[in-house]
Image (cartoon, rainbow, N blue to C red; front, side):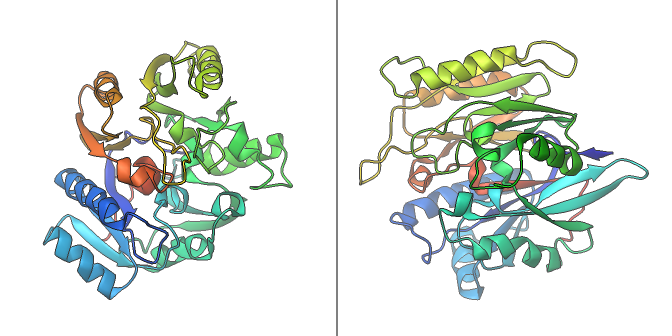
Amino acid sequence: MIRFPAEWETQSAVIIAWPHHSGDFTNLSAVEDTYHFVATTISRFQPLVIICKDGEHQQHIQTQLGHNEKIHMVQADYNDIWLRDTVFLTMEWQHPKASVQLLNFRFNGWGKKYPHAADDALNLTLFAHPIFKGHPTATLDLVLEGGSVESDGQGTVMTTKNCLLNPNRNPDLSEAAIAGQLQNYLGAKRILWVEQNNLAGDDTDAHIDTLARFCDANTIAYTSCDDSEDPHFQSLKNMEAQLKTFKTASGEAYRLVALPLPKPIFDEQGQQLPANYSNFLIINGAVLVPVYDDAMDAVALERLKGCFPNHEIIATPCRPLVHQYGSLHCASMQVPAFVKLNF
């Protein structure tokens, strides 16, 4: 039996990739400030693995962060910082004996939109590194990004049709075939197919981690909009109506927690950016919530505190990060505690 762990389960570490001047950053210093905050915050609670480009880049990062026994560096090549979509997904095998498997799915730059060769090869470098070495791995011929799938840890996977069924991912696979792959690889017993287009500025074709997130097996926090003048209004109302039809594994309606949209943020070319609060990151004892210097920040923080009453809720400045068309959850990947890393 295969189990895809929920993100609120205890973790052995979080992995991030530090931004580098070789990327397409126009605001590298500001993004590094966000990463400094994220790194120091996560390391208060648990180990953090930082992927860096080379020795010079590692020294640059260590100079910023100082000595920290909870932070571990790994040198590897990568195209972009969005590790949610490039780093392996961890599965737990529960029968015939307990074991783990690190799954390396194909990555094609969100439908061949961006260069991706180094990102697609990243997991092979990680698997060979002493920190990760020794665990069973599998490299699979399926394009799948971590930001496109949510798990309740009990066999329910939530995803979007707009992404997983997009012909720019696995064009030869039908909906039934992709559902079969989720069952085979992620242990999905049920799939909640959300029918929603992407937020403005989101180039992932509507990743679920920008739209709706499990907070526990019975609760979904979701991106909402009450402004009838906002171009997202009708589509998000439609998504809200669909979420109300979803049932838990026991047949009950989900507890739904609406997270408002912040006021629109635009880049220098006038493109709206995909700022949202659903892109939060759960770690051991805390939830890091992206904030954008917006009046809705406080509303989102309060509502997520209601979802995670036993966690510290930490406002995490992500306005610089969203200028790269992603946010906090997109930039990170957790490793469950049952994976014993070699620190």
